[in-house]
Image 1: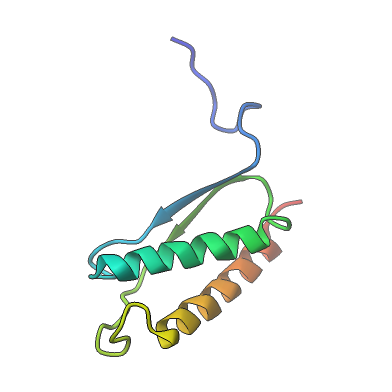
Image 2: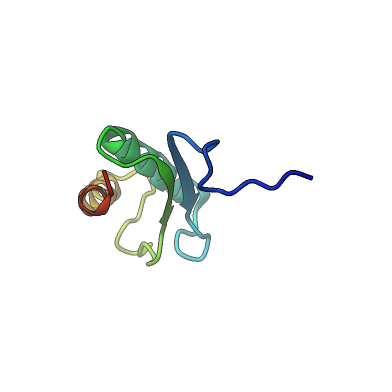
Length: 96
């Protein structure tokens, strides 16, 4: 058996991991929307992010009472705004 380091030469490009727990986003539609939003935010920032393993994890719940519909414009704008701030911080901390 051959053992390779994760940081070895075989790892190139940008790898993305997404964690959107069911306990924070109850509806599958909401989780899917958030994952799509995360992928879009990373793809727009991919030119400035350093290659490597990146994991985005939802850490706080989306209030179902505040965001009634999973496809609502309000939820979409809230997710996009938060992701924009997150990506800007990641780019600033990203080693180049």
